[in-house]
Image (cartoon, rainbow, N blue to C red; front, side, top):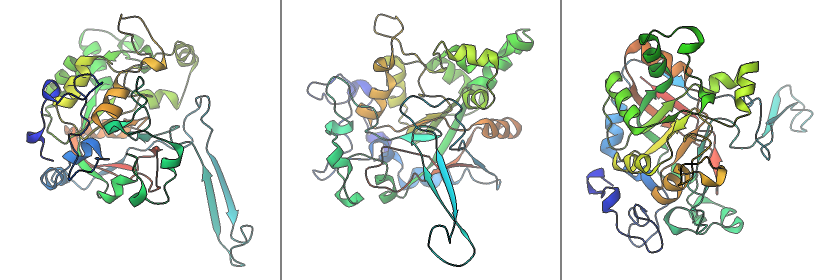
Length: 347
């Protein structure tokens, strides 16, 4: 769908029982429930424009190692990687190797599918879809009525223009310009800064980029870099449960929809700042996540988390280019709730 056909947040048709701004039904076609959400904005013209960003012959992986997280969350197992000879696997008498991997899809760089976090009051996923284990166990994508990541493959995967908003680099440059030095000039991702729309727009202007419909917005806070080499001060900060990210308020949700991004991603644990705030401004808990239900459940906008953005940041700073061709092909398994993004930035 061309972005010019989309209403803005306040103009979205009212969905019974849901708050204003719910986009259910907007991308439906020929009486069929849409399962792709804002990936529908990746039209041939948008993809062609994205491909034009790849002109320098440089590609950068945005994928953190599967085993990089030093402190897994409860309920999310560490990856188990088992290597075996072909003889041990009883596959062949010849010389060679096989391997197996068992891992949680949320433990490292990931996409959240549109069923990962539901609209909590109703328990419904994007487009008003009720998610069940039975439905997620569909034998193939053609039989899968859930808005999960395997449907991306029928659409050709994700090819889009990525835009890096390098919050960490911008904020630290600003601190140095104010005369701060040493630790005082470090903007730590475990201090829980809530990145506002105003800050994002300022960074974009300073970086010389303009947003376009169908872009993938990528925000760098520096979290994965800290997590790879946790020191005593970092561990102490981690106990407070604060993670920098986009400010989880209605202004942010409105802005993200009105910019018509195809998806968002970042190097943070949740893309949005943790812990979230309640309506009264007090600090809440995981159930108070704000952007998760708005983006995943009500907009159908995929969220990427824990992406490895340091090399991308370095190249953008060196080249002065903060937009690039972005490709991503998640795992192709029916009913897939989350997946490594297998993402590349191509200049």
